Image 1 (cartoon, rainbow, N blue to C red):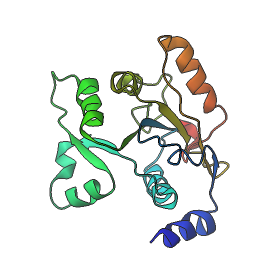
Image 2: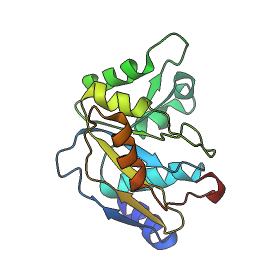
Image 3: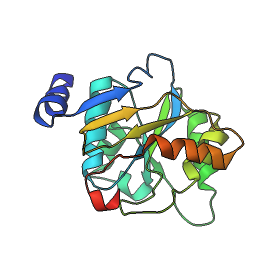
Image 4: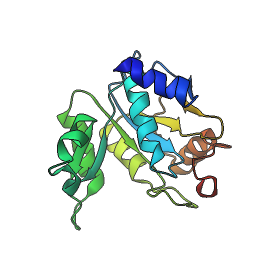
Length: 182
């Protein structure tokens, strides 16, 4: 079915992949992948197509209720992991533990935390990467240029402010499906 994903992504939709397109060959088996801007449900199928094309297994977390019948099987098949989101839990630590439990785990998150316009990213992804001792790979959802740009692996330092300046600069000029939310 890889051929079908390529046909849809490249031919029908007219998208392209640029940047670090071979991070799986670099043996990066564990990473936090941040996808920006997340403005529409369309981002999900672009990610699923890209996952199939590159052969890079990616994961996501969702509330545990999503993993019940009838959709649970599908969400697990495309890399989903259920997360108990009841209050009082340290979600950063819970997600960081998923990295310990798996030989290969590339967690894809939207740092905006929503599909709406935000002024500041949530910081959980950053602290998950630090706790799990894995790099962050930046990934654009650029509907204006119809491209997914992939960064080199970035290892967070102890300078949160500078790290965020560096990461946000990677996404400068990128427009999501809903331009007003970019």
